[in-house]
Amino acid sequence: MNLRPDLMDETSPEGIEVVQLTTGPEISGSHLYMEAQIFSPDSKHFLLHRSATAHGGDRTDPKHQYFRCDIDDSCSLHQLTEETGAWAPSLAPDGKAVFYFVDETAPGQGRLSLKRVDLDGTNRQTIMVVDSPLPDTDFRPSRLYPLSTISADGRRLAISCFLADGNAVPPTWGLLVFDVEKATVDLIIHGPSWCNMHPQYTRSSVPADVHDILIQENHGNEADRQGRIAKLTGGTGADIHLIRDDGTDLRTMPWGRDGTEYCQGHQCWRGRSSWAITSTSTRLETGHEAQLIESQAVVGEGHLGARTPGAARNDLTRDVANPHFHHFATDSKGKRLISDAQPFQQGGHVVLADLGTPGTSPLTNVTYLLNAGSSCCKESHIHPFLSPDGSKAFFNSDESGILQAYMVRGLSSA
Image (cartoon, rainbow, N blue to C red):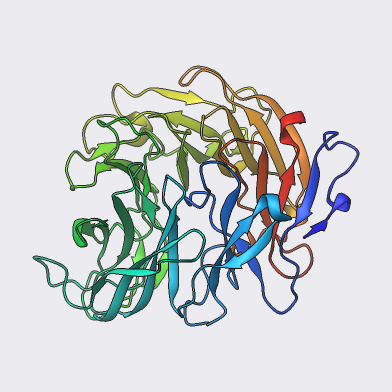
């Protein structure tokens, strides 16, 4: 862990510190994506992704592993996974255990294991192994998405995957839901448009909401028979849905698909609320903007996006001149938001803002923290996120020449 005051400048807030968490030149370090559930609820421990890119990494590399970072112990790192193929962990909402997969699959073959280990590294168990077609289907999972997501009650784990055998046309993807107590798995939705699903369980513990998963549908994508994606969407772009984890009650988020507003493909829950936020790419007569829009799901599985009747939409960035926000996350209370922002050609800014009343208030107190110094290419996206209590921020950067992980502390005074 190294202090990096050089990443701040005269416009950075007083009282914050930037800490470089990984420094080894022989191995790259990257935090998990800002959507990932990797923090303990007390904000003292999180999972660090080592020997990785900003969107995954080489799961056949034995150095590709996940570590527990203990913030109060000088951000010391302790290896939690040990298997080649370890993939897509989720930290249980109570902070006691980590669930993860060991991916030894290829299209139409191989085995997939779901495992758990206590956060202190003890009591490692294999919950179940999938080495045959999924129940009531001819599909075998492969090409697992690099993120899993866990329900707020800690009972179910979801992950998206490729399903075809390498010969089927069109190729098929789907969403798996694992019951970690019963050691069962169900395929709840599948088809050719689910190639980049970004599944995210609601953080809400309200019984009526706890089964909801936010998912992305990529209409018009192009991929080969092995599931390698050449084009993510067609002309109208992606749209975002909400689905129950039993495969019922598919709903629509009112974003994009109107010929002017396009979903960038980055969205998250606003803390533990029923509101979600997406980043858009909006093409206006006056130029291009990238706004943040919050909404709630609308009943019905239509694909009208922003034109969905009865939609509640709130442009969080309406008071920001020429907004350009891309990757973002909130704290657990949905009161603070962090994002990367233009100018990306000059390293990318990291900004912090306050969130007001859901559905009505814009961002306020938008505060520049630092320039990440990143090349901002796909494999080194900044991907900032916050600790649950909002007191610390985390981001990635290849400013040193190798992708590394960073922390900003002292945000309570920012």
